[in-house]
Length: 435
Image 1: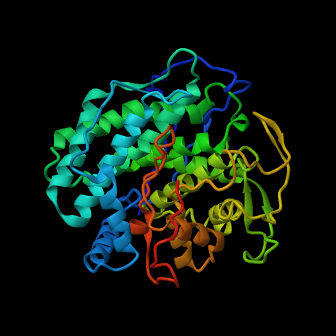
Image 2 (image 1 turned 90 degrees about the horizontal axis):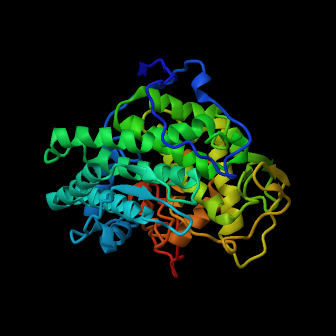
C-alpha cells in the first residue's frame, strides 16, 4: 500500500467560464481550503470498474457458455456500439443543452469504445482493440472542450463533463496495455481527458459555480466525483483520487454520502431487517434522477474497491440501503408500495412532502443493478429489492435510451455476475424490462 499526502491547493488550474444562472446562486463552498488528507490505496492497472482478474473470470465463463454470462455476452454482441461498423463522430466542442446538443454524440462514441474494448478483452480479436483505440484517438485529437450555448446554464457544462469524462476514462483504462496503442497517443489521451473534463468537475465541486452546495443534487455531484476519481486512477494522480474520495466522506455538496441520505427507515414488509432503507436526496424530485444515482454510486464504489478502498461497506452498507429504498419504490411500478417517507427541504425546490412519481411515472429502468446486487450478494448483505430489480433487466445491456441520458456503461450481467449463482439468476427476464 502506498500513503500519499494530498495537496488540494491547485493554483495552476485556469477555470473555464464564470457566468452563473438562477440554477447556481446564493453562496459558495471552497475545497481549496481543505487541509491535506491521505488515503491508502494500490493501483494495479487495469483497475477502474474492471480488473484483469475480472476479465480472466468472465472470459472463462463465456468460453464455457455458462449462464448468465453467455446471455450477457450475446447482449453485447447485439449492440451496434460493439460492432466494427461503428463510425466515430468526434466534435470540436461537446455541448449539452436542455434539448440535447451534441452530448449524445460523445456519449455514444464513449460507449462504443467501451463495448469494443470489452469484446477485445474477452474474445482476443485485435480488430476490436484497434476500433476502440481509433475512437479514443479521434476524440483526443479533435475535441477542444465542453461548452454551453447562449441561454444555457453552466450546469449543462458540468453534466456533460461529469457524465462523459468517466465514460471515456474506462475504455482507455482497458486499452492502456494494448501494444497497438502507441505510447505517445496514450499520453496525449491522458492529457486531453485531464484538460477537457477535470477542470469543470473540480470547479463545480469547489464552489458549485458560485452557488450554495445544498442547493444542488446528488446527481450533479456524483458524476463530477466519478470523473475525477476515474481520471485520477487512469493518470496515476493521487491528488485527484484523494479529492474524489474525500468528497464522498465529507464534501459540502450532496455527493457526500451523509447528505445523499436524508432519512433511514425500517421496511414495513420485513424483507430488509432494521433501519436499512435509506431515502435519498432526490426521491422527492423524480425517479429518473433517483434511479440514476444507483449506477453512479455503483461505479464510484467499484472503482474505489478496485484500488483497495471498500466504500460499499461504509456505514454498515449505506450505499446498499440507498439502492434498496430506490429499488423497492421502482421495481413494480404498477403495484401499490408501502414505503415510509420523511418530508425534507430542498434548497432548490423547497419542501418535498411526498415521494415523486415523475419521470413521468415510477419504474425507470437503468443499468447498474447487477453490480449492486452481485457485490452485496457476495457480502451476504441480502440485497433483496436490488436482486429483484436486476432480475427484471437480465441480461443487462448498455445505458442509452436515444436521448440525453447516455449516462451509463452497462452490460453488468456479463461483467459483474459472480458465483454462487442464486436460483433463477441464470435465466433471462421475460419479458425484459425496457429502459
